[in-house]
Length: 229
Image 1: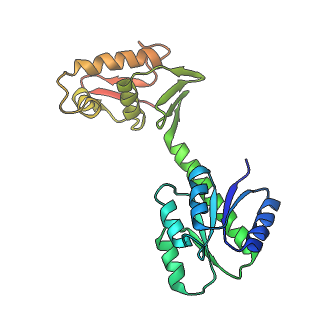
Image 2: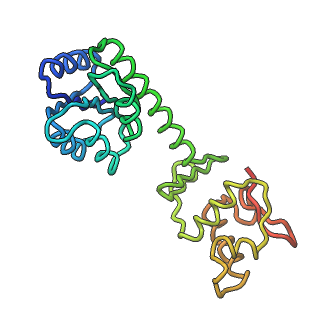
């Protein structure tokens, strides 16, 4: 999928040159020529990066950056015609990720855009991997709260999911029934430890091929339960 870039500058020749150069790299490019238009487009579109000039009509680049940061963490590269370090510092303080100074080398701009997009892609992939756990045929997506055994999705209740998530993310750690009751149900829960036993039994019926000979959720007799990865 092509990366989407929003180029914001009131100098149409600069916008035209940037758009042509970025499209040559296979990127999709939208353009805005004042601060308000930039904010409106940023709210409507899902961009991989915004290239934002400081000197703009309606709202300047600093104001645009500040407003965008109220609803999006899209990477922003500020473009300034000044070499004043205070402009660069102010842009970074407003939430910009990088800056370039006019007159700029288009090759440098493209290199910075690609570097930031690569870095963000790696972060997104790492975050996704952190949310998805795979152990011995079980797959858990913590963000969507879904669990699969092989290709089959398991229909877990909220508490069954919470119980499995706690055990799965702490393999080998034995939790007493009292500890599980307090963590999963809360200290104010009026029930007793038999609630835990019932939920473990139901959980095993869903995740284990043979609930009487579990391969995931084990019992430590006289102590509690643990997950074996």
